[in-house]
Length: 94
Image 1: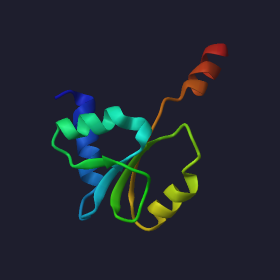
Image 2: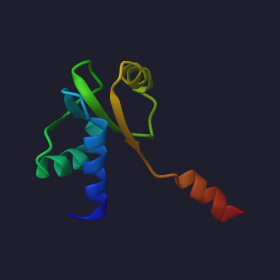
Image 3: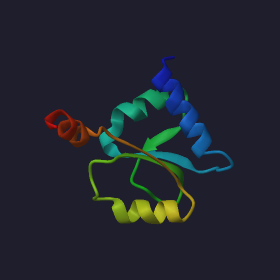
């Protein structure tokens, strides 16, 4: 497997250490769900709910912000990612 896949698997393992819940994947991240499933990681497409131990989402939207905040405040692990395109744009304009 490639280095990014290894990084994701290690991150999921670290976030889930000592937890017995499921891994939820935001519906916009079907490719992440497919990748984890190929690597034999049990996960499901889901919103952040009480029965999850880890939730994976992207940083582009705040539509789930309140649910995510509650999820993390109650001890859930959060894997969130995105590209900093606006930072790159600012850097290129300077």
